[in-house]
Amino acid sequence: MTYKVRCFFCLLYEMLSIIACWFLTTFVYLYINEQANTLFLQVLLWITPGIYLVYCWAHGGQTLAMKSWGLKLVIHNKNNSILFYIYRYCMATFGLVFFGAGYFHMLFDKKNRYFHDRILGSEIISLQI
Image (tube, rainbow, N blue to C red; front, side):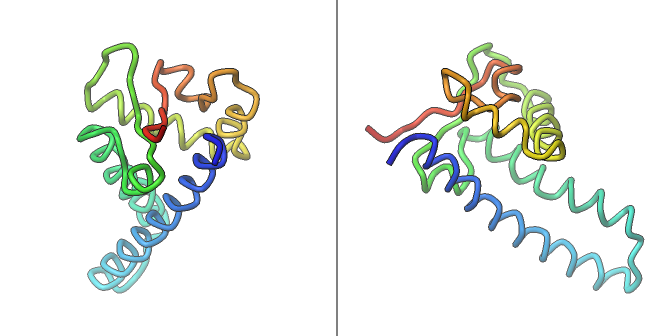
């Protein structure tokens, strides 16, 4: 299986994890509040997967989906701080908001990098031979 296909399926698997995270967050929020403040809930639904992704990237460079598909985040500029991962999450979010333009960039990039990875100097590598 090619690298780009594995990245695509990794994104789908990651989306399933994030949807489960959203369900759990919404359930706990509505159980505690009983009435929804939609703006606060939307921000909370953006922050919750961010905490999961930033934590996984900072502690080993892999999320559950990346482990399953044999992919790993590598940083080339040696900026291995928590702020780097938060900035990466924000940039990846903006790449999704603009009709997935940040992710379609990988189809045309010579090194198969997402747009936010190209800007930040990071790369997702394949661990499988």
